[in-house]
Image (cartoon, one colour):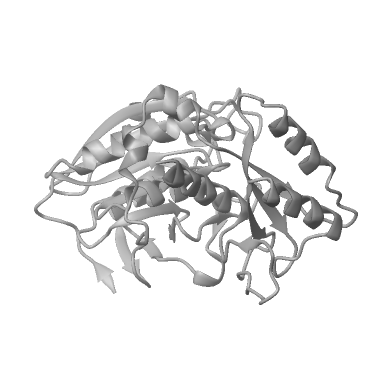
Length: 329
């Protein structure tokens, strides 16, 4: 199915956060030795025309390498999205973002906002100074999705592919088509400015979390600490026990949640599992997520630790943080 552009909503807002798409290198042939987050979002849109009947608005929310993304920026970004989405003449929001933590930001925004308008994250694998940058086309494609009348929810657009925030993962370190959606497959494609949709736009079961948007700086600083540890051959529970000792000593920011990046169908090395059970008995929320890039954990009757289904470890961490925030409220 090919979706049409909206005729009743006039603005698409482009929020900048930095990343490779805004990166600069010393030479056009250098695609890895760049510094991320150097070019402003208004400059990134230079030469990019809005679809007919639409106006592009830009706003710089942050300017960083996405490997350094943090919760404070997430909240600020969510607030700006909520502000613009509430404007009647705004068709949707585009966010330029680095690729490293893009899937985490997308999942967070979908869980917190559950928007009924489109929020489209886009990126680049080559810096803005590259001889053949991929950012401009990705931005054009993202604008096309944001301007689509039927679109809703948070998606990621890269290399002409539309991914749901719930499923998207970065799966390659270098190639321009760096993202995949696992078993679910893409939401659709952007072809010469036209959106060809294959399945439903993402929806969030949670219905959003307005408490996050209303949090003050002190509350943001106290967001629950959730760690991720990986199960592997020869794994031990030493790091879990150290975190528990830190917690017992009354540190200012104790571990409140633990995600185990488990092997296969949620299996965990016996030594690490024993330590995780000790953590669970001590009041730490523990969740297992599979290391596999596709599939989900199928529960067993004798499971002692909860599983995160199809969520990746990094997304399971966000889900657990939001769960803990909800319980605290």
